[in-house]
Length: 254
Image (cartoon, rainbow, N blue to C red; front, side, top):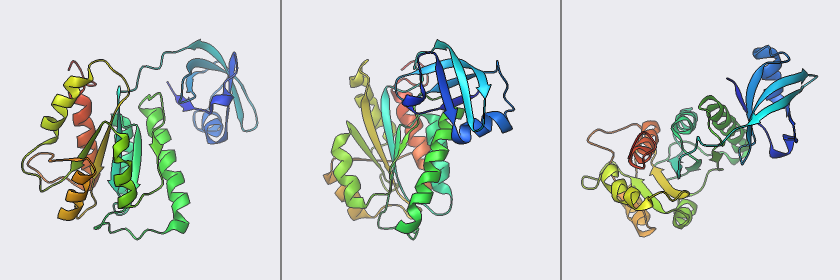
């Protein structure tokens, strides 16, 4: 069943108004008609099973059949901080990590970032990233659309580290502590408490320098490895997010 995210003010008592690209998608791509059922969510606190009541010029009005529980989100809020990779790899990171269950993304610039950052073009790219997050959240039947931040500097990223309960610095030269071993004791302490947060920091194609690792650790991050194999930068965040969700019981019994 198709799922659409709308703004909270689109929800009425018994109906929801859908506009913009979503309305066009329902009318032209899905060839929707009165009586067709879909799911609408405000991405905050309300989600409902609804049916199309009318399709107008750029507006689709749906009638609420029943409110639905918002139970699709992980109790651990994972933020993936990804140093800007080349090409469309950031789009892949956002799409796949959204499907896995990441709650937010922090693109950032690091020492070995290859991409030439152009602030003038950034608004369009950020708009596309957020659209990809929304579409992936709809496809994966998420209750929320992950937040995608505008790119940060390395120093800005490190300053934000103290907002999280756990920070994991994915370092290909880490030969000791592996991510699963680092997450397991932390996960055991979580109990049933919701709202715990974890930040996963992933480098660019060339990885991190040794002094970046030192700076990350000084900011409170734990340097961890992701196994014996060297992963592509766009793969590392997916593996890390899946590992954390597994260890915290989101992929079966913990």
